Amino acid sequence: MDFIWDDNNLRHLASHGVTPEVAEAIFWAGIADTEESTTNNRYIIEAEVNGRAYRLVFDMSHEKAIYPVTAFPL
Image (cartoon, rainbow, N blue to C red; front, side, top):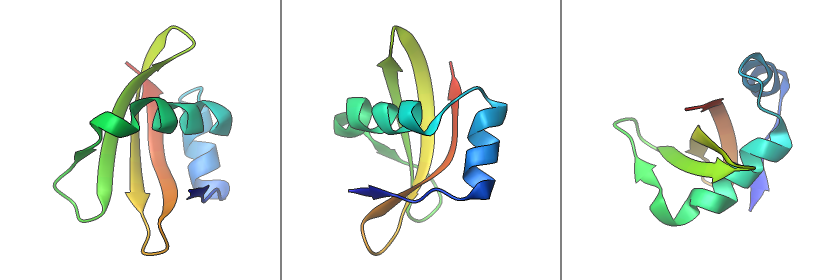
C-alpha cells in the first residue's frame, strides 16, 4: 500500500502536529476498523499510536494508494 504525500496534506497534518510517520502508523494500527464516510472513497480510522488516540481521514485512489486528507489527536 502506497501513501501519497504532497505539500497540501503534509502542511495540513503538520498544522495538527502529525507527521507522515504517525499518519501511516494510524492507518496500519486501525485498518481493521475502517469506516467509510458519506463521501465516495473517503474513509475514517481511529487508532492509538504511541499511547495517544488519533483520527485519520483519507481517500483511497483507484490505484489502491492512500491519500491522507487530515489527521489529528482525539
